[in-house]
Amino acid sequence: MKFSDIISYLNKAASEEAGDEFETMAKRAVNLIYEELLSETDTDFERREYTFATVSGTSKYGMPLYVQQVLNIEDDTNDRQLVLKTSQDFDRERAGSSSSGTPTEAYVFGYFGVQKQPASAGTVSVVSSSALDAGSNYKAVVHGMSSGVDLREEITFTGITPATSTSSFDAVANGIGIRRVVLQQTNNVTFVGTVTVKDTDSNILSVIPPYWGDSPSYQWWELYPVPDAAITYIVRTLAKKPPLINDDDWPELDNRFHDLLIYGSEAILLPLVGKGQAGQLAARKYEQRKEDFLGHREQKQVTSRKFKNVTNPYIPPSSYTRGKIPNASA
Image (cartoon, rainbow, N blue to C red):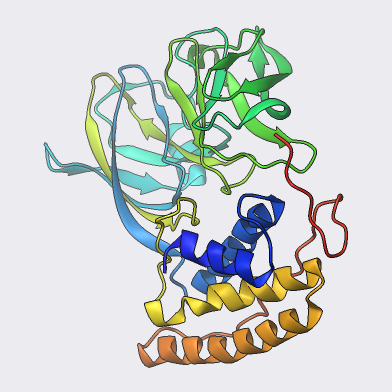
């Protein structure tokens, strides 16, 4: 069952029109249930491979958005693998060293709100893939350093046309230029498109898909010695499965249990539109079907553990009125 099919069913069950604020709430509810089901069966991570190329003189690199754990970093061309170390071991053995050459080791340097830092000092731009993300209700708050001084600037989105900061942020050569980019929405609006953040040289610093959250974090690694040439590495990772975003996204669950996403979401949403009894019925169906789902997973020798209740309370927008949910303003 495609994501659009699930949302269409929820709209009909709640007697709501497609495209209004209820649909926004429905998408969030579906992803809440989806994430919990994946986590309860230990299937919320999958193995993925990425590649990245080093730059001479640059030792720190951000991993892609979904990376949760790096398994190994390998130079396949020369059949070399980096030794992955803890930050404590790295600092104890390499403190104060600035050697350059072909990297042999790596460790987790930290977590930051962008995947890359600005290549040169200058402005930052933000743009959405949707023209609907425009106006005073849609802003990006950029936190970073400008001439060594901590700075915060709000940038108002202009949809598919890039909007640029008035401030100049430091380059990566001077340390951390951008610490974090936070999406800010007011009046109960929600970003529709994918947000891309770029530096003054049009290098992509961060990509924020809808429903991922207002500010993603990226895992950064430091290599030693500092690379003195371009080397393309293959990174094998455990990556978090992405949320359902596009209409044709397919839940990574057995097709027989896609109805769990409907029942679980109905249990959250229907009471908000004055259909409390229907919501209670959906909650009972959800619990019954979840037992079948978990039993099915155990039969496939999935490690069993104590499961928590996934019917988390959903807090509706402040403008919610019983039986009626207002349309989102653009």
